[in-house]
Amino acid sequence: MNVDFCGGSVANLLAKIAVDPSTGLTRDEAMARRTLYGTNRVTPPVNCPSWVCCLLPCLLRTASMQAYHLALPKEAVVRRKQGPNMRRMRMDVSSLVVGDVLEFKEGSIVGADVRVIECSEDCTVDQTLLTGEADDLEDGASSTKRVSVESSNGNASSLPEILRSEHILLMTTQIRTGTAVGVVIATGDQTVWGQMLAQHQWPTSSSAAWHRHLAQRQQSEEMSLLLNIS
Image (cartoon, rainbow, N blue to C red; front, side, top):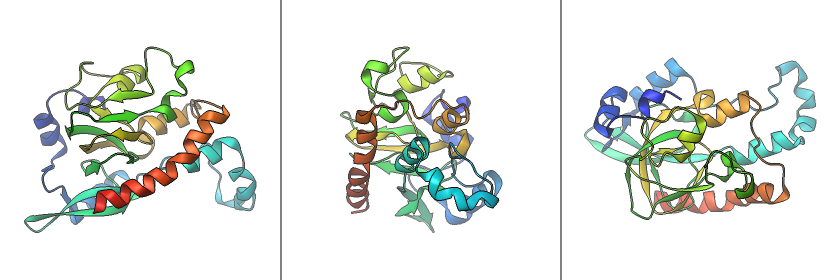
């Protein structure tokens, strides 16, 4: 993640990223950024070359690969500029680019690392997949945090600071209550989740409760997307 996008005002962030949050990026702008920076794909914990594709069914049964595929966000609600107007679109998460403006409601799974630019007063986010269970948490990190446009944590740079930052939503986390709008500031392997996988720091728990929590999210994500698009 580019920590420069974590600090400063929302106005400065939008100027750096070059997006109007009321309309979002145009299709051409998004395609240009995707060509430049690549797709929003996080390298899995077992990254196999094509010549071992015959082993894929076996690899998918490993605990870390099962967790990866369950945690992988599926879709997002994106503001896309069309002419002078804005259109809400449900898009595959792999299509997201830095600068995309996303909308979230209760149950939404965050599909990239996002800086919050609007939110309701009751907005909270569940970070269990990144922090582990409550009994395992270190450095003051919490599995659930309040969401705000401004952060009391200053310019976050370390993982514990980013996890505590109220104005940052991280890929794979889930909106527990309220609503929010945010701008994508990191995608793919540049996200906190991608960096944790690269450093073999994820999955964060091997307990049955953690894996049950992971498996149960699919239904709530599906329902959230239906509500978001309506």
